[in-house]
Length: 178
Image: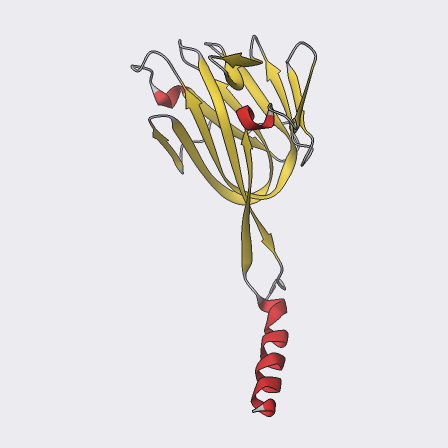
C-alpha cells in the first residue's frame, strides 16, 4: 500500500509542471469597496480612483466621475463619449464583466463599448466579437493577454457602472515550442 501511495505521489508531483491553467477573478463592487473598511481611494474630484487591495486604477475621461447615486457607489459615464480607463495592464486577462444601472429602461446596451490595449498607448476596439449584452451587464471575452481596458459610453443616456469583474488565468505550465 505504501508503495502505491509513493508512486501516486510521484506521478502527481511529476505532472505539476504540465498542469493547465488556473482561472481566477478580481471583483470590484464599488458600493462595498466604498464602505468601511474602504478598499478604494478617490482623488482629483473623484476623477481618479485606486483599489487598495490590488492597485488597479480608474481614470475617468470627459465628465465621467465616481459618484454615489441613491446610496449606490459607482462610475458615472455621462453620455456621448465619456470613458474610464482601467490600468495597469491585468496579466492573463481573458474576460471582463461590467454591471451597470441605467434609466430609462429603453437604453440601448450596445452603447457601452470596451477597448483593450497592452500599454494604454494604442487602443483596439470597440470590441464586437465575444461581447455579450444583456439587461444590466456587458461581458467581453478577449484573447488571453495583458491588457488595460477602456470602457466608453457612445450613447445618449448616462451609464452608472456598479461593478466590474476581471477574469484572468495564471498559467503554471511549460510552454511547448516546436
